[in-house]
Length: 69
Image (cartoon, rainbow, N blue to C red; front, top):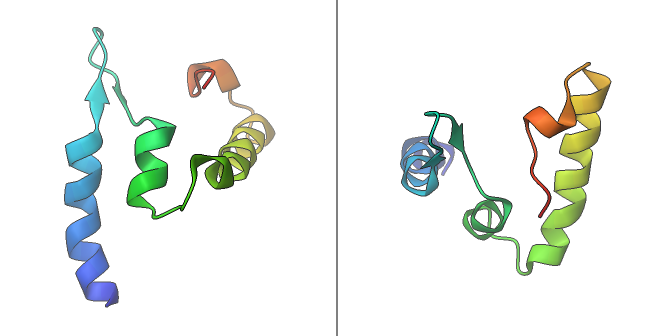
């Protein structure tokens, strides 16, 4: 199964990737939550919060990596 995931997930991430007017790639949290098989978006919100905390703890500007949702 791990082999199956390693082969299929990158394609899924590429399919939901968005690109802004400056060529920056990004992925929307709602779309990510669906492909990661969260039953409801509200269950994915703690994951987003932990990612924001990790961004802050690594010295990165949260606003450079996250939009309000």
